[in-house]
Length: 197
Image 1 (cartoon, helix red, strand yellow):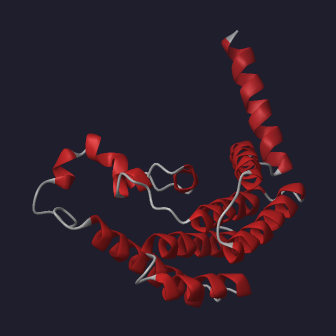
Image 2 (cartoon, one colour):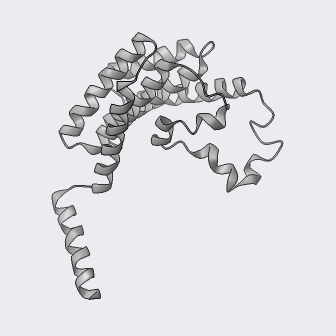
Image 3 (cartoon, one colour):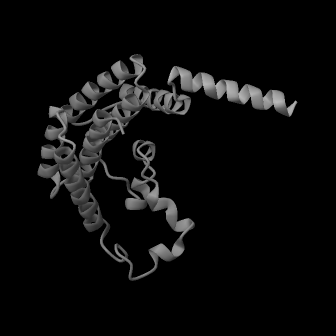
């Protein structure tokens, strides 16, 4: 029985490798596309950001149909972030609530929930403790914008929308840091989609 089960597993893995399909990546892309479809139906907010979100959503759908799972996943994540930025309301619970927003969770930003497992990392006197949440949001937004700018230059990105998103994020850093953070993260997701990793 064990030999038959092992043989079936090896055969399935071999078929997966022969076809060049990563089924986990496919499943993640399918989930992101389903979430994107649900969010897009109820989307409201700033028109310019909604237009960009719809443009990126169309790209994600095209990539998904072309069986480019990773690219579709990253583009769907970028579109989700743009739809969220269009709404523009920062979570009421501060930064910890921001890490629980579904679009950011899909983007893999769960690090703020780590305090349960590593309470010493958030001990008094550590960076960010005792600061005003608005100041921390500006700091996070600034770091994300800087990173997006550096990645765009390093990987020589050719997507004009990424440059536009970074410029828009820079313009909103002072007055709308939450939107700037989301725009920068959307730009990072598009850079990742373009380069393929």
